[in-house]
Length: 315
Ligand code: APR
Image (cartoon, helix red, strand yellow):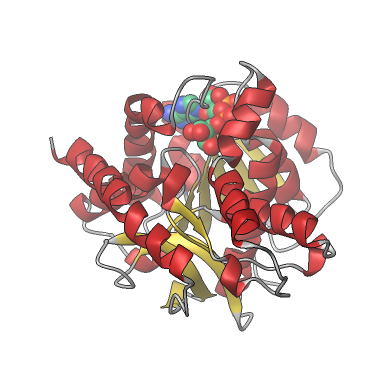
């Protein structure tokens, strides 16, 4: 098993800590590099006592960011502020955009060849922000930048399985579009195994998947947004990226990447992962009429979120 260094930026946060734990349990990781602006030493010491392969190193402070990143094969970014009740993902924009800008500039400088898994919201905009920063630094490789949309897939699988009365571990549902509200489009017509659900049920399942983040924000009542399920989803996607890097064939996951699959420059869809990141963006496949409508309906919002990210860097 090759040596792989994985860095987590924002490792002491609500997502970062369980994500650090899950990555420490991943046998594909040889060095787990944890970075945060606060509290990293404690998290690194704690996680570091677990007797699995990965050697854990913790860094804090601007001056040490380069050490966290140097030699990284994969950088996962859950740094930022979470969404609180009443806030939309876009309310987070200005704070998180600035954080992502700083961290992307450091990646460009210290580990320009690493794969980047963006978790910081709004992902629809933070991925274009990272892309613009990377372009400015002349190291942008569109095959290596990913917005993590795996939580939407995880939710769609859970909600579909429960309604269809199927064992949840056997269920697969592709989710396309973006990673906020109506831009999230689960393709239940392509779910496996198929189930005979009514149009009304499919509409409700689509809406619940789109509102999954809000459901958690409201249930947490002022104490943040999804952290544990997000960490699980982030760890799952990171594992797929590492498998791809290691040459495991046929690793396919949905992810928000630069593509030409639609007229939008960034779009989430099924992606085959390989030694250099994105190996192939797969066709959307046949859509139901309801999904075709959903696809057209999501485009204006996704387009404006992408433009907002690009504008943030350009001005
Ligand atoms: N560099 C590194 N870490 C940072 C930086 C920075 N410039 N700025 C903030 N952080 C850290 C914080 O110190 C904190 O430990 O990011 C962590 C964020 O953790 P939480 O506040 O608990 O937020 P969390 O719930 O984990 O969500 C983080 O992920 O899904 C998104 O919407 C969510 O954008 C939010 C992000």
